[in-house]
View 1 (cartoon, rainbow, N blue to C red):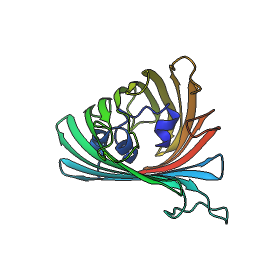
View 2: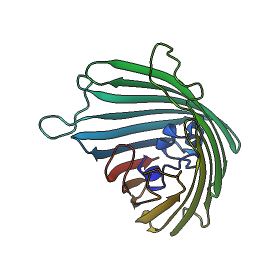
View 3: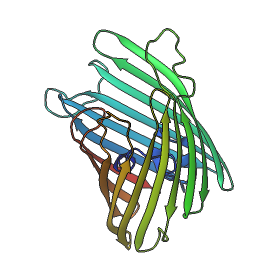
View 4: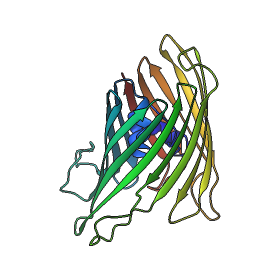
Length: 264
């Protein structure tokens, strides 16, 4: 999600948004009824990346669905999702059960990569745990791609990533002022771990306001990953217009992301 991107990719304990389906499925458990989210960014080389996520609450259960797509812009200059050109597409489906303050969730991930000559696929799963103390604080733990690629005949690798995060609201998020801190550790199977420290702060009056966010991340020696990311949101009732910026990300070049979140 764009909110997570502004916080250096921390998402293990960001609960209540549909975008949690990509980082910790159990984070969907605090939704009231429905969550929707979409993001977009341009990528160097006439590429674009887009995501969409939706989540629904059914009593003590939550259902989530997420889609990511990386592909070429059409000849008209407008982004167009198509499976006939080289692309990479990811679909995630999640089921979560909540009992009191504790939520357990699982996801299935399906990845399809087509470079115009060879088409590969991958299938794996995630497990997540979230403990949300009302709107005050949350603890999240997730293991993504727990068994690598289930298709033995495919060379695509899905490295396992373990996340442990903690978020804390220092003021009531339903009041005028907003102040949230985030700390998360991430341990990828194929590299050294890192620690992320982030914060959100802003003012919202009668549902209208501005929220800013920034995060710092440790990084292994020789890594080109930026230490700082930043972003912000315009709150319009239950809708948020999000923006995130990083000097560079794995897709190359400066990363400007925009997104829209809606929670009902």
